[in-house]
Image 1: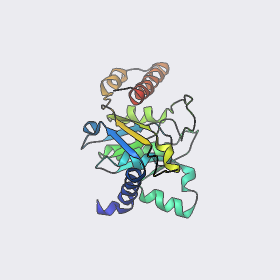
Image 2: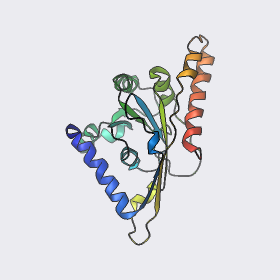
Image 3: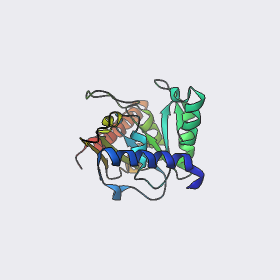
Image 4: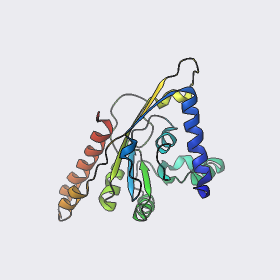
Length: 209
C-alpha cells in the first residue's frame, strides 16, 4: 500500500472531507470482491466520484480518465500517481483498451464511467461502448456502483450536511452471456451482444437493489 501513497492519500483525504461536511450513506460493501480482476462501473456526477468509490475498496482502482486531464505537468503528475489510464474521448483508443486489458489480466481493478464524462443534468446519457469491449475481451466480473449527491461537495455547508449515497450493487457476472456469443461470426450478433452488456450495466447501476 505504501508504494501507492499518492493514491491512498487522495482517497483518504476525500473520504475525510466527505465525512466532515456531509452525511455519507454507504451500502453494499459486502458485494466488493477482495481478489481477482474486476471492472467497476459507476455513474459520474462530480470530479470526486473516483475517490468516493475507491474509499471503500481495499485495492487500488485504475480509473480510465479523459486525456485532457493529463494536459498540464501538474495534473499529469497527479493522474499518473493516482493510477489513472488516459483515454481519447469520442474515438476508439486501442492504447487504452490494451493497457486496461493488461491490468485486468494481472488480476487488477479497472474503473470505468460508462457515460464518458461528468453528467451535469438529470437527462439520460448514452453509455459508451468501451466498457462492453473490456467486459467481452477480459470476461472480468463487473461491480456496478451508484453515486448520488456528490455534486454537492463543490459547495460544502457545515450547517446543512447534505447526504451522499454510494451503493455497491451485486456483481454482474456476464461470462456465461459472453460464452454464448463466442461462436457468433455475424458482426450484427456481436453488436447485439455488446449492446446487451451495456444495457445490463446500466440496469445494475440504476436498480434499487
